[in-house]
Structure formats: structure tokens, C-alpha cells
Amino acid sequence: MRAKFSICSLLVSLAIFAICTHSQTSSPPRAGTGDLRKNGFVPDATTAVKIAEAVLVPVYGEKVLAERPFKARLDGDVWTIDGTLHCPDGKGGSTSTCLGGTAEVQLSKADGRILFMGHYK
Image (cartoon, rainbow, N blue to C red; front, top):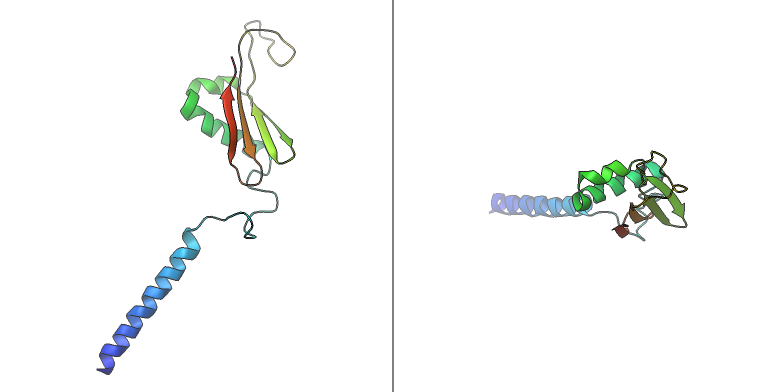
């Protein structure tokens, strides 16, 4: 009888340990829990551009990468990432006038959420 009780106690202890360990390692950090990094999940322009490229390609295809270099600017807690318009005359950029548009992605610096994604014509 004692052996049966010891085995049952051991199995219950192992089950509780497994449940506690799983719940601690499988839950993503949540806002307000103190788990967020000080600089947010998107701490710099390089990270913002990489995320933007990663979400643009599945929607617009590999051709969107022709808009490189992507430029990122931070306004408050929102990263805005824009593609570069390459004009046929080779000048391109914001001061050149040519037909076309570029992709734009807006990301939350704090948690990496996509706030907006689109492509202008």
C-alpha cells in the first residue's frame, strides 16, 4: 500500500512540475508584465526594416524588394518604413518626379504590431 501511495505521489508531483514548467516557457511576454525590453521589441531602424520586408514579401511578392533601400523613421512609438521609388531616369528619391509608388509599413516600437501596411501607386 505504501509503495502504491509513493508512486501516486511521485506521478502527481511530476504532473504538477510539467504543467508549471510548460506554462512558464510557452507564454509570450505581455505588455504590463514587466517582461518587455526597455527599448521595445523594435528598438532600432534596422530591425524595423527587416520586419517590414518580412511582412511585405508575402503580400506583394519578391518584386517589392526592388524598392530597397527601405527607410525607417521613428515618430513617438511608431516606426514608419517606406520603400524608395526608383525612376527610369535613375534619379529617384523624394525630390524626383516620376510615376509610381512605394510600400509603407507602420509598426509599434513597443510590441512590434503591424499598425498599417499598404502600397501606393
